[in-house]
Length: 102
Image 1 (cartoon, rainbow, N blue to C red):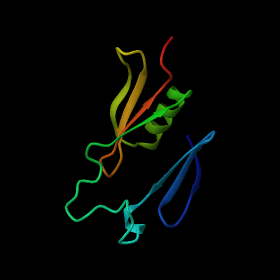
Image 2 (cartoon, rainbow, N blue to C red):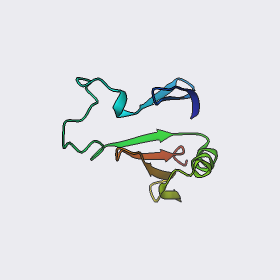
Image 3 (cartoon, one colour):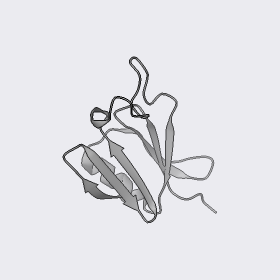
Image 4 (tube, helix red, strand yellow):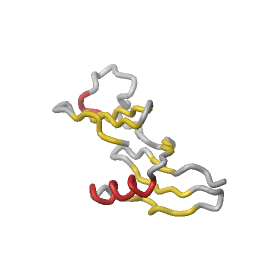
């Protein structure tokens, strides 16, 4: 994905084709925003986001160059995909994968 915009409110928009993902700092959310966690709530527990990309190696290299911690390095999985995994600051598990072989 490519960074389409970033702003002073700690929001980043990532775009690839028709897909857009908005990443925001929780601090900017209104108190009643549905994405704001309740006190003591574990924000990312149990959430996995899967992103499929045709540019897996380029995206992996981009993550490495950014110095973002990689949870699992690029790996060929037994079920026919190659992927890598990262965890965002809220604990959301993100699997970035190439298309399935064959």
